[in-house]
Image (cartoon, rainbow, N blue to C red; front, side):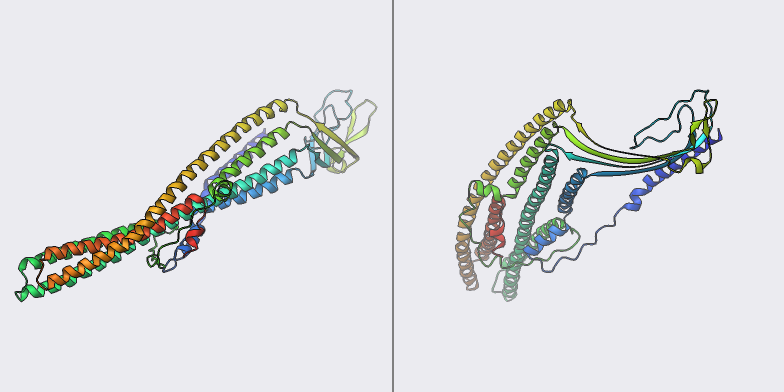
Length: 484
């Protein structure tokens, strides 16, 4: 009874310790937040893409998935290596019926002779030591199928990482161009405000001298106020775009200072388009990811098929046993028992065995056959998903080409609009200064010039974004990044 109470207390302490470990585990093992480096100032687009790959958690998760798949390959290979097991035990047990009890394990159970007298509760020490080697020497293709499935899982994880990295690069590049366009809008509105301030200064001087009417001064003040509001709106838009870009870079709390890299000094070159057909499909990260999923599904089907086959295992084992029960019985047929540890723990008998076992689970034919059939259906689903993605990418690529063509035509016409607007503004300013036109005409010319400058910058930015869109649809951003 005391021994039972002792076991109960021991189990209670063990469970309490396990529960405490589980409760304290998350707090003790929680990782500290990563300390992120400062963003370069100014930040170029290639630098932004590099920072995004290092800091964005989703990409780090995909990288961890690749490492886990590679670890699974090593684990699966180790499963087909020879398994070496060792066991050593010493027990003190009652001796009813047989020459000694031992804890079940990998040793071959051997019972002793049965007593001819009544039962008793005396105890004795016994020992057991064993060494066993088991090797699945012939798996009839199951080892190779399992290895191929593991390697296909690595390729699929790497393709998913490449797909995520490419899509993320496209997102970061688009966010960079949008933020750059917003910064350019701020600069243009500041220039417009400077023109309004300069004109207001001249008008106020003319009003004080009596050359200009008082309404001109009020109108100029209104135009200055409107220009200031446009600057504030442009700044707000630029701040929002910079915050979005910083969030994609994994550092939403940092202020981003952009480097224009002469985006607005020249137009990007547009190629005729990526190669069509299988070449374009093979180079697209998204389609490669879907293709690797098909390969992985095929490998899983082959593994299910290989599970139908038998396996040949080679076995070898050696063990020794000791017991406090003497080999010879007394005159009454009772076993002679020596309860001392020195009599029961030393090994007295040694055995060994070697052989082979051929195992064929016949019911596995049904199970694996149905599993392989279900996996083949999943492969068909993966092929259909691949075809759907290829169709969508072909449509996106065609739309991207049309947008590039339209953006290129717009970017070529925008300078003509800007030149005409500047000429109109110069003429209106000259006529107003000469007293030949009123302020309304000059104000309209100013608005036309501001709109033309904005359209020029927007057309240039849209062409860069159209080239980016075409690269994203074709799976190649080299055309864009090669021009920076």
